[in-house]
Length: 220
Image (tube, rainbow, N blue to C red):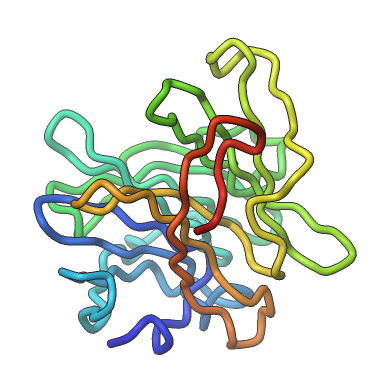
C-alpha cells in the first residue's frame, strides 16, 4: 500500500528494529463507532503492509466511540500505546494499552488516566533537538484552517516557561503531527492532510531541519 491509500487521521510512526510502524485514528471510524486500531508496517516509508488489527476492545470495555490518536512508545521491553476514548455520558479520556510486539495485539493496561470531569483531547508532541532544546509541536487553527505550531521551553524542562514561536511549522490545513527520525538519522514530520473529516485525510511525511533560531524547526 501507498500512503495515499491509507485513510487515517493523527498519524504516529514508530521506528523499531529496521521497520517503521504507522498508527493513527481510523478514518472510517473517527466520528462514529469504535473499530479499534490498526497498524501498518514499512521498510522504506513508501511501501506499506496491509492493515494489521493491533487493538480490539475486550468485552465490557467502557469506550464505545472516538478511538483517537494512538501513539506508541517502547519502554523496558514492552510497547505502550496512549490513546483517547469516549462514550455517551462519559468524558473523553486518555488510557494506556500494552503489548510485547509493536504491532500488538494490545491489551488494556491502565484505567482512564485523565480526570473524570475533564474532556481530554490528544495532547501536543515533544521533541528534543540535537542541541538539547525542548520543543513542542501542537495543532491549532487560523483563518486558513488547521496548522501545526511550535513552542519551546525556555529552561529546557517540561514545567518550564513555554514560549510560542510566531512562525508555524506548517499552515496548509493539516495537523495533529509528530516527529520521528529515520534509521539514517533524518528528522521527519508527519501529520494528516488535509483536515477534512470526510474521507480525504492521509498521512503526509515531510523532511525537516533543525535550525539555530526561532522557530528552531523548518520544512526542507
